[in-house]
Amino acid sequence: MKPVIYHCVSRVVERRFAFGDVEREQFRIFMRMYENFSGCRVLSYCIMSNHIHILLEVPPMPEGGLSDEGLLNRLRAIYSEAVVADVEKELKQARSKDLSDYAAEIHARYAYRMHNLSEFMKTVMQRMTQWFNREHNRTGTLWESRFTSVIVESGIAARMIAAYIDLNPVRAGLVTDPAEYRWSGYGEAVGGGAKGNGKKAREGLVRACMSQKGVGFEAEKWQEVARVYRKLLGVALERKAGRAGEMVAAEKKKRLAAVTDKLLQRGAKSDGNAVKQEDDEMVLREMEMAAMLRHRVRYFTAGAVIGSKMFVNEVFAQARERFSEIRKDGARAMKGNAQAARGQLWSMRDLQV
Image 1: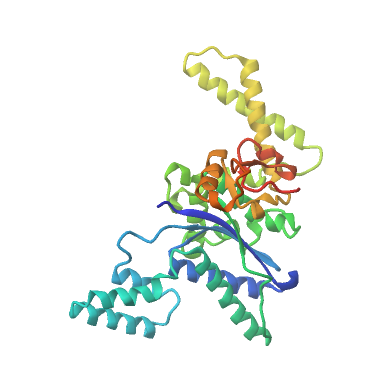
Image 2 (image 1 turned 45 degrees about the horizontal axis):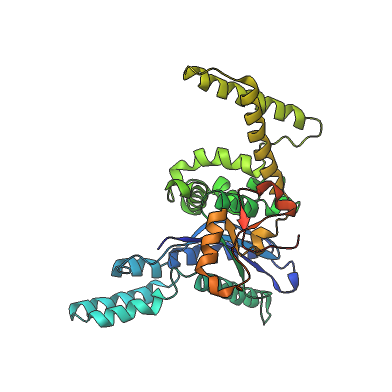
């Protein structure tokens, strides 16, 4: 089995603006704690005042399960040392008496909550509710409903949705540069440093941006990824009126020169018009994508499955019994604010936008 990526969203009850700085930081702490426990990996996230986004990769449980030491390390993420010591003692007794079934039962107490999307989200949301109610002397639910999720293909879909998530505070008018917002994957990657959670944030974005190339959670590739990712975020685009045209022209000229140089190095004859047309289209596509992410794209939160046409159709085929016989395939072209992604990204749902 391959890892599955999900874009998860949950909203505060009645859409209240309930999360200040303290609450957002506490949610981030719980999220990282259960990430370490569950074996799921956060690729990016954003904690807003009335809702949260998490781009989560859920890998399968390792074949053969966890070792005893692996289980104990996971438990240390959320349990006290006293609890971990008790479990360790139980495991040692079971192993010393060759009671493999009993040892398996000990593992099973905790393993069902690992490598599981629903358990991860449910536990983080429950812990946040308990903490929030205690801190604010209240009772009842904190969340509007169960979280929603969209299956996301690795590659361009994961990159796009990671950027969409990180741009939440920009769309809300809270910051102009997503790096300035500390409760997001990109903000943590930039401001959190090269160790600890800053490293985890960098690993997540590297994975989101390069997983289709077989790259794992490799923080050392952050600088390479960051340059490309900032373009996708639109940070590199000139925002001052009157300068956008100059910036685009300069970028086109730079790329045209680079492509022409490559052709000359190969001994090929450069067709200036063809190169210019291809380069213009490339720059335009990148700018359109970056501009698209600055708007609300409903498909990214309600499209059920987002990815290439082949990927969406494969997921549709696997869940064929859930659809009527009339429907022949799964992939639907995206419309409205998502026009820039047409031909590259498809949705399972044909939404009214």
